[in-house]
Image (cartoon, rainbow, N blue to C red; front, side):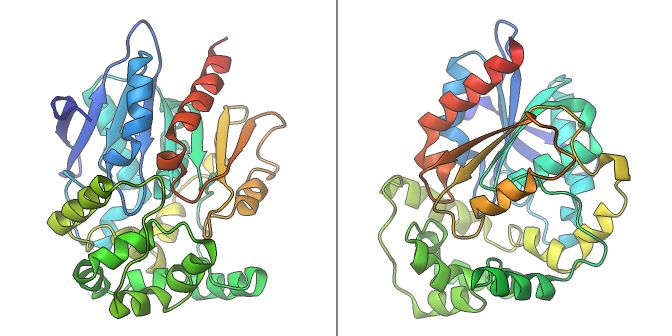
Length: 332
């Protein structure tokens, strides 16, 4: 993406956010894109270019802990009330009142909490891979969650969270970054389950070393950009997105959300893009999430993509067209 379109803002929490911004033209809407782990604003570059060329406004922050944004290593700073305020600070800096919020992976969690803390700033929501996430219950227990997952699915979808929750994990990932990038982008479903998802699997695979082939959508340039970016910034800050939930900061923060804001406002349009080959964010979980009684009939548009977790990269063109078509229907 054009470096001249990047800006910085200091939020009320005293944190610097680095973000890409291209203003809307001809009365078009502005889209906010939120990335997940392990990523940066760059992951949205193909989708962003499409919408920029169509005249839409585009805002893509490096989320907290990534890229040119500050990288604090205190997990308590990664609560969603604070990060939602940070995002709104970017909107305020650009004098943008309302946006369509689009998220992938942890970015979907960020978009979900915008619905809780600042619903008046969002006219529609789009989620990729990860669906809308309601506030965590106050008694959230990570160990109970993965035990339930193993019983229901045959493996722990979030088994790797235990590794990310350890402070030494960041250095292990950095020391074995060539292995980690092929794990993070893994498109072999069973290999990913056995070497990424299961409890203890990721650390074991990293320490053993070795790499697997890149997926078809990733170039050597993509790989080098990933490696250079994380060698510069490390993984201590990005893994705080996991520490904050495992250590109870998120459930305590979510407890402050009023009950009437646990879900998006009734009738607000929602798009959900599921990835059929995602070994962690299973489409069945996403579909079940949107069958909740809080979502009205016809409120959610669903589309399934023949892709792994990184559908915003591998299916960028298709996603861009589908998202624009959905947005146009909102306007008409």
